[in-house]
Image (cartoon, rainbow, N blue to C red; front, side, top):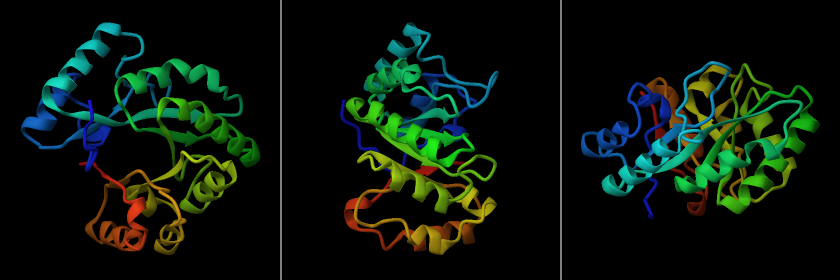
Length: 225
């Protein structure tokens, strides 16, 4: 099923709804064409949708996607620690492909940037056959604290499906400047998503900083409440 992925509804905006009911609400009442899902927990014991473990839930979710026309844009979350092995996420990637997802949210936890870069490159290589991009999200409490670090790692990873995910909330929390966002390379689609989450002034500034990117690098907005 091909779904226009414009303006997907981010996972944190619908997390209180159980799958697949959130797909009905997304299409019928909110008029979004895609959602983000969390199939791996962000931390031990954290909430997630057991789509990998529960084959029945996966089948029902896919059936509801086909019935509603709501697709899945991105799936969370792969964390790159010191001992990351891409083989450990193969089943996750297979599930993402079954859902028709386009992107995987990636967080960097390894304090060794060279090793983290190698892990990100390895993840992107593993994700590519499944038609997925690796979207490295900078967050100030991780080892990828700002846009400069994310861009540095993505560039050095040198993978065609490597991306940087920009969440306006994390832009405000980190040392990232609007100039840093404007400096993201324009020669390729470096961003899959701009998460609009935060104050109006911040969102306006982030959008303005990114407005100069080439038409071929346009990105959907992941809207969060």
